Image (cartoon, rainbow, N blue to C red; front, top):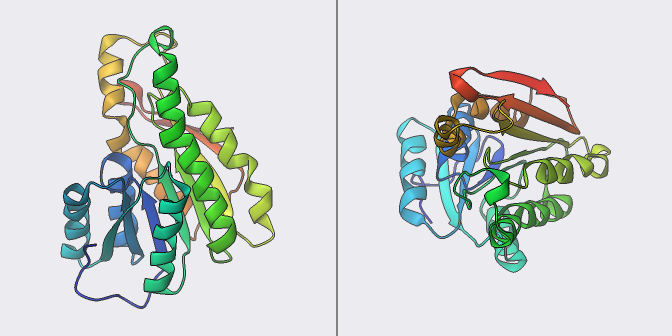
Length: 236
């Protein structure tokens, strides 16, 4: 675990799953810069996570890193319990997808690709939602960001938003951000760009907004088309 020289006692506690890279890192840095206490949750890649922690702390924020295999409910639970033991509360869950499939047309996605993506991302999001039901503070925020190249993109969005009603009575909002390409059959250039889509500042900005206190939206799938260097956003 890496931290910034002591636990800060003010600010929301935000867990960013896969916050060590791409859109997760961008969201973590944004929220850290706004005064939130950020936990970079990572799948046992401490060096990469420490780089993000150090950047947040170097900019005057508060951050630490914790490791877990998000496909393992026990490890995920242990991470949440460590967050609660350290801070005494947990306010925000941002679940960003890990890259498990090299961007490719759907016809080339194998059953092994799909199973790996499901176990890494959809199952991890399910465990995160279950843990949030048990432990997230009232008036909290949950945001899931799909990978732009994920064959599970619609599945993950619907999984997350279908849970919104279960959190509503506690004032917790639940939303999904779905990066897409506008092209039904992507070109080689778009496929290459999709590999880097997780780092898009537009996608990170939408996710950070939904994770913030200024948004009251819930149960929404926010589609961000970031293809060809242009960003548009739609609510579904």
